[in-house]
Amino acid sequence: MVHGYIKLLVGNKSDLVDSRKVSEDEINAFVDETKFFYLEASANKNINISEIFTYFANETYRQFKNQPIPIKNQEEEEKKLKKFKLEEKYGLSQKYDKSCSC
Image (cartoon, rainbow, N blue to C red; front, side, top):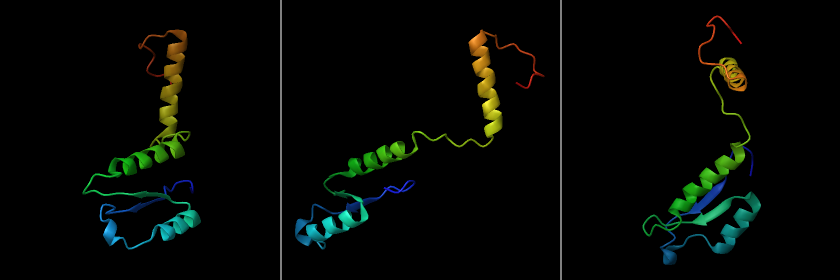
C-alpha cells in the first residue's frame, strides 16, 4: 500500500456467476501485480458490502493513527493544551489572570 492511498478492487455483482467477464486467474494476476486488496461483492445479495467499508475504515485508521490531526491554528491549540496541562498538574482553578499568555 502506498501511504495516503487505499487500494481496493471490488468485483461487483458477484451473485451473477454465469455473467462473469473476468476470470479468477486474471484477477489474481492483476492483484498480485498491483498489490490491491480484492473483494467480490453483491449489493443485491448483501455480500461483502459492510466488509468494503470496514476495510476502508481500518486502513484509514492504520495509516493515520500516529499522525497529528490537522488544526487550523496549531499554535493557539498548543497554547491551550500547555495551559490545560499546567492547570491540571498544579491543581490551578479555572480562575486565572486573563492577561497571561502562557
